[in-house]
Length: 236
Image (cartoon, rainbow, N blue to C red; front, side):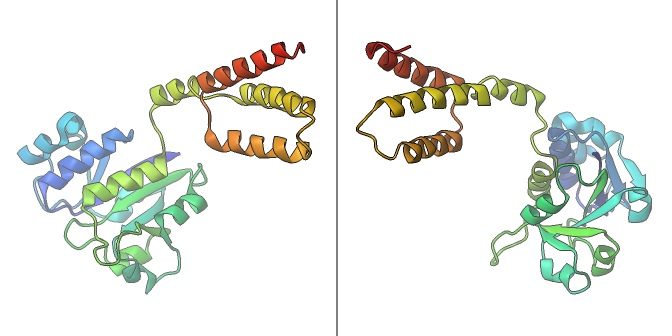
């Protein structure tokens, strides 16, 4: 998926800095800023962006949301869903939005973050292809803009860490490991005459193992246990 992060009329350098930092955390390599109301690359913006200062310095400045999102599906954001729902029907809570538009269904997505003072206007939201909100507490639904961005990017872009994906891929058991364990357990059940509802027991064990997400080490430990049991019975 091609992804573009668009920030509309930010008023505070600190928020630009924090959003740049969050953006880089999730693999966004450029900011598109519409009509900044402060010096977007000022001292505080650079300071609070930390190691993402290049995103601030190289931000693309645009005159309108249309210019910043040209050629992309436009996804607006809001903290107050009623504000968007009054004028359009395609307003989604974040979890529902991910179910409908996630997993690469949208090839070119521009996520539009509203003003850090008043957000997007109803008119601006009506021009979006969809609007997403985070289902926070009814008593205080408005998140800090950078906190909201972190939640949105993680939900939309998912785990962008290749190192973590590869590392955990070597930790957790694969289907072959699990099937080997289930096979040994099935033999154990079939050999035990005290177990009457053998299919039910095997099915219950499969459900437990598949829900637990066992590691390779855990599977190996259980395989050894069943192996010892199997050997003591003189069966191979």
